[in-house]
Image (cartoon, rainbow, N blue to C red; front, side):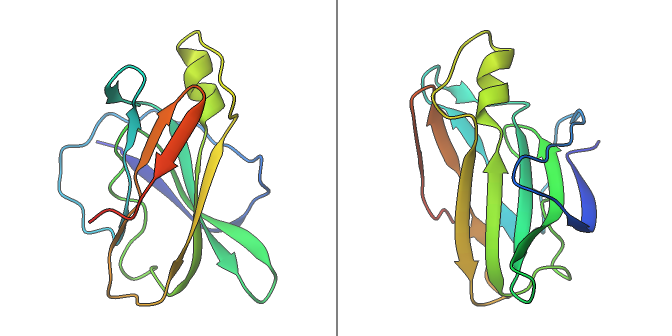
Length: 140
């Protein structure tokens, strides 16, 4: 199966989006960063939503693309070896998701930026989304 594709060290701008189809994933992940997306308006996982994980390069003040994926749940975002302390951003392509359902949305994308101070910790960064609102929290 293909849940996430790794593109290490690639520099992208804020509107960059790559697409590929995830076949689904039921395997456990050892990724230190995980996420899932829930469509709270319909009460279902937001399957096939495009997302990307970025890490800030403090020397150059740019975001580096770590990985991208399509799925309501994408557990394999980054390897433990590539996971270092710093600022991370998960970008969810919410507008494309709602458009694929034949609906409009107020938010074309959602970016969640968070800080990692300890590379031995794990971070679960879920997104709860409807067409006109979203929320997130630090999961376990």
